[in-house]
Image (cartoon, rainbow, N blue to C red; front, side, top):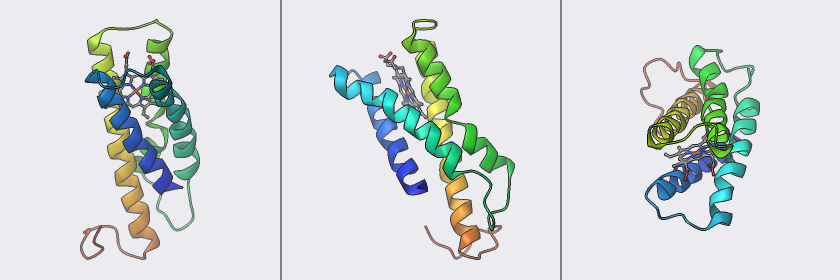
Length: 126
Ligand code: HEM
């Protein structure tokens, strides 16, 4: 499930950057950014819930709830409540922060389940 979540996050980044660069103009294609946004938010809440064998940490909790921030701001943008380039850039920063947090939490989970110490990061590869 974490793998699907990570893949969808990269699709989301590509769609978002494409839109920002003016490349994604097809409305149907763009609407997937909104749909994937809901799926990502739900998957993160489920996939990063506390799990036996994986130490609870602030990082994991932050990663679990991180997509809620770009989703909330994105929906406010969609509703026309907020707008303008600075808001879009803030939204992109929140989205990219969610990607980073989820990547880090996923890597920690992988290390913990592989039986590693998770401390040094040595020897477990990618
Ligand atoms: C969990 C991550 C994300 C969620 C839940 C999310 C959700 C949304 C939503 C609901 C909108 C409003 C759609 C609209 O106004 O039509 C939006 C707009 C946008 N998103 Fe995201 N997004 C996420 C991540 C990203 C990322 C990583 C980027 C780029 C790096 C990005 C770039 C954009 C841009 C540029 C817009 C505004 C487009 C416009 O107004 O034309 N988003 N996002």
